[in-house]
Image (cartoon, rainbow, N blue to C red; front, side, top):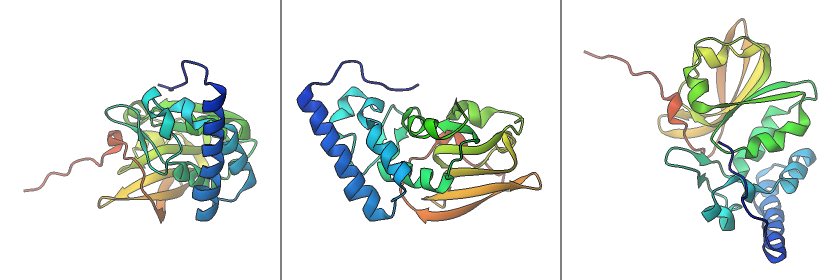
Length: 206
């Protein structure tokens, strides 16, 4: 479900949010090494407050995740910026976005690519078999386990950007499909909301 604004903002509110958006770019993104101009332009253009619950609009630009419902959260702005930088989308990319329940990351990414399809975390985790039609997959959250069905959606040579949970620590991770297999390489350690739908399968022990 995409969360969008239900009422127009007043001029004062709009000015306040625009100021917060600029502060997010200067004090969260730039100082953390996110300096790609297209990423900064996209995050300056898209009003993040339109993609959080009404009660959270006043703090849409804080450097923490924002709960969306009882199970999911919108990652902090820096996570979105780092994912986009690492993804390095191309104009001919066909992208599958695994959503956390907010349309924010998709709105940032859409103008940069040829095709952008969105799937819920639950549907992506339950998919039995992929068709290998996407050159890029972005997962808007952290996973413990990459299901074969989701990996199967990636074309040979395609890449995936996701959060990864290892022993309770979340990191940004990247991978590429080679020889039909996808291996995830952990990158920067950063707080990313966990998508419980992608919990690792339980192993039996005796």
